[in-house]
Image (cartoon, rainbow, N blue to C red):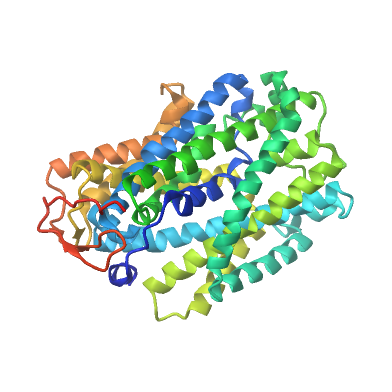
Length: 495
């Protein structure tokens, strides 16, 4: 079982922030699917300076709420997320949430990576005149509207390559390549922003409204909802990065550099790119009949295609498209590992092709291209999970009492409360009854409700008794056993 495997495993090696947390989160936040659609609807609602403040605020929220509590818990315990989460959700709850459900989420992100890689590459080749734009035309199969045959054939090829890389345990090579790619992608994004910065200075929200066309009446997801929804899974994995941190300051500095700074910078640069293109293209319609499958209006792809010119756009889109494949390898590695750990009776090779087939079917439907919808689903499910764990962390005052056998009602009920709160607040926001709509009608609300609910349920005595578990100090094979539910766990000694 997943939890048993994590309990028996050696603790992750402790390293400095620039070898662990910093590059890990930088890779996530400079990944093109993250920033591609961040500003599609907010650009039509406000000027650049308020939106810039929103970018900084969302990065601070991801660091302070979604990362820091769980990363500090991982640092204190030296344990991975499945074991630590067994305090909040119980051993059975953690098995399903941090094992199976997280594996299913990785299948979705795998499909997103493949879909974006093929889509951006095809658009780049079409911009350069190397591929007809008809290659992106949807394929009508009876009542179904699918990706085109050439698109699906290319996606199938990349799914096979990325699946085999994980099956052959080449994840370390992929991780090394991602560390090289991340700074390059950040520089490339910055160069695109500098290119379009002059146009952004004259941006008017009316330009964004004109670009949205028929979508202008749609409320759409705010930037904060997109960013925090996207970050939900990464927040749950903060436990692992905290456990791999050498010192407390590595937890903090790594999060500030890899999340707060990198997230704000990425959001700001993509804002400049899209706003600059919207200002330049005011009155020009990129969704003209000659383009059978236009890029989503006010997306990063739309801005690059319309703002840079055919040659530069081709280069930029191909580079970002190919770079999206590295996270696909990492996602396939995670879903194979989690599913095999949960059901070891099924061979790794079988889990590989089960997950890859599911990813291919998702790509075929075109749903992974709807990045706003994907972020909404991820935020709905995982932000309350992170919130419930943060509530448990607050309840225990940063300590960790051990695991709770079976299901912990307080944690599972808090998670459910957070999930139910989000659609309810969305309905109220649509009627204008929610203040601070961009915050409360977002995964942030699910996080806050789940954290508060855990504190309430714990106070009502709904927690299962905890079972002490051995805690591994920094870089050591020794074990310190917690004396009981109220025992403090001293942080590993600094080196």
